[in-house]
Length: 150
Image 1 (spheres, one colour):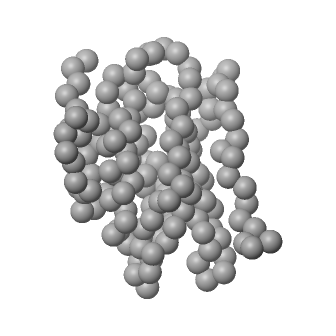
Image 2 (image 1 turned 90 degrees about the horizontal axis):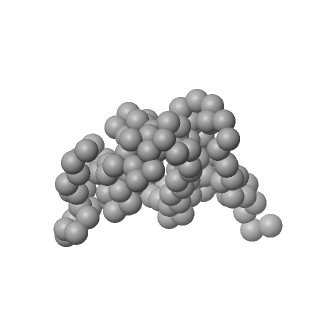
């Protein structure tokens, strides 16, 4: 499999929208091996589609690669492209997971979106492609429930 990075080793600006973001998928260095890859974005931001106010989340993406992996710089730019994107928490979280699953075609993927309170209510959104593979070491995502100032 030939791989030419779109971002790695190049100067890359933040995409104007998630739709314009280009994700890179280099070959998996351990095809056929069941292992977990975790990305954590503790300062994810998007905009409320009703008020235009910023929303903040702690995003955790876990996946088991098949033939490809996602390149981290491209993923960082993709996630950053949501900064000026208006979308409900559910649309952002599930949309990120589905795009990665559709393009990368991992063995398994899950995403947890731990959103900070909006109107006094924190919203957590979870999505996965199915059951995790047998024998996978699957640690807890490690994000405690929101407790406010207490």
